[in-house]
Image (cartoon, rainbow, N blue to C red; front, side, top):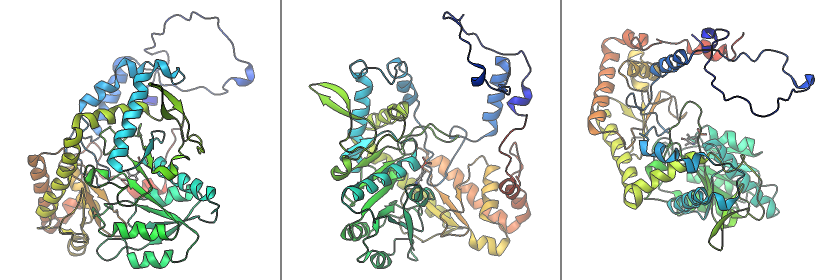
Length: 478
Ligand SMILES: *Cc1c(COP(=O)(O)O)cnc(C)c1O
């Protein structure tokens, strides 16, 4: 039942102090014509409503959540503690810099830490999410080409294994996407890339995530970025998957010119349910003059707000989602120089452990000897032999209190289940999940109907997904 349906006129929980300023009545023209329809409820009913909703969903606190490419790691509680300090919450974005030196120091130190981790020279915290960061990075590349008198550089090369946001961001930035196919082992086809780029003065650059969405680290990465640079393009690194390599390999050293990170993945701030997120963008020196937003500068020992010389403007109001930055900095400081590489080492170890155990019954796409933070199972064989699809296996997992892996992605594998266990899971949790996956495979052969009917233990059972996609009901009609 929706909160609007539970609403009763006259109920409420507002306990506002008496108004101590003169009342002001808006001109008639500025008034709403229809009722606002805010739900009216007692506090106890409101509390129960949201508790009930929370029980119906699956979060990291409920159980294993191997949703590939989303890095659903556990977010340490201490992050919440620092983000709730009054010095960070009871400030106004228009306060003079000298009164918020602590906040400025957080921005400065996060910028420095992320620059060191990625091999970039400066960072902006303004972008609110990964895709927003991609858009920002592409605008940087665009500004660079325009400043160099190269307005015709509008084509961006994106591999077919890319995250869906990559081509979408490119189009939003006014660029045209050129797809480059993968080789049969799931890597960028270097020969095809060379062919696309040869004497091509329209190439703006390349967008790549490495390791890619199949969990493969591209061994040709230096060659790939060289090809782009040789034809005058810039290289954009989608750093949402940094969980696999942080502390070990840096996009800057791989030849990338700019990068975005998802603080709400790798750097352990909660995500899902629509945010808030944070997608900081870093770049090398030659792009820094175009950076958006504020730049924290040191003026004789006092931190002050500055701007890049040819700044492309604002990507978001003020400083981005500042409290997300506080959480990420807490995470970085808690792990330190030893903990950061150890976290990614364990993320890779956990993924390899699972991949090897599951390969007993499941086909692994591209068959890597060693995967990075995630791997892709191909359910094609089971689908052919039993009729049980990746979707059915995913639904079966729900009945076992496991969130399904990412389904039907990357698009290069038809019956894909892409699993990312993350470093925060214990061997016991992984073993239990492996047991469930193997049992579901056996169930596909012994009783496929049971899997077609799953889930049966969840608050809502099998949904009509086609119906939901064809006839979406996105508005509540009063
Ligand atoms: C999650 C993700 C993104 C998009 O991040 P959002 O914060 O959801 O916009 C982009 N690229 C990759 C590889 C991702 O995993």
